[in-house]
Each structure stands twice: as structure tokens, then as C-alpha cells.
Amino acid sequence: MIFITAKFRVLPEYADQWPEITAEFTQATRGEAGCLWFDWSRSVEDPAEYVLVEAFRDADAGAAHVQSEHFRNARNTLPPHLAETPRIVNTTLPQDDWSLLGEMAVPERS
Image (tube, rainbow, N blue to C red; front, side, top):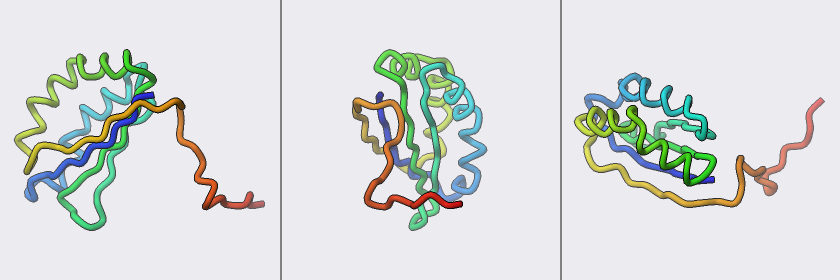
């Protein structure tokens, strides 16, 4: 899978509205056949920073995402709300889902 994490520093005046600003892009991306997940989180230390964790089935699915109309639209509509260019980590992993964190295994509860 293609695994991507990106940090978005949003202009403070848009920070509370970021989930709504990105809602159409988020829903369209989650609807892509090759999207495994596309999840936003807000930093607990910086309320103007959002972290996007996304994954795509393979390189073809990742390419389809960046060539999609909703991605092109996001490239035009999201930057005016940002304080800086987003930072990204993008890698390919030989798996297709999250692995369990064995060091913090939770016993089965009845």
C-alpha cells in the first residue's frame, strides 16, 4: 500500500472550519475504489495544525487519486486557507491494513 501522512498548518481564522472546508474533498477521496483510509486529526498542541493519514491500495490507486478531479479542485481551493505548504511523508509498505501494536496488547474483555 501507499501510506501517506501530511501536516497542514491552517491559517488561524480557518482552523475551526477546516473539517468543513475539506469535507467535499475528504468524502470524494474516501469514495475512491483504491482508497483504504483518509483520516484527519487535529493536533492537541497546535489547534491550527491538522494531520492527514491516508492510504491507497497500490501505486495505481495513488496515481488515480492525484489525477482525480476532486484532487485538482483541492489544489486550487485549499491553499488559500493554509499558513504554509503542507509537509508530507509518503512511502510504500508491504501490507494492506493497520498492524496491531503488540507492545500495548489489550486483553480480550468479556
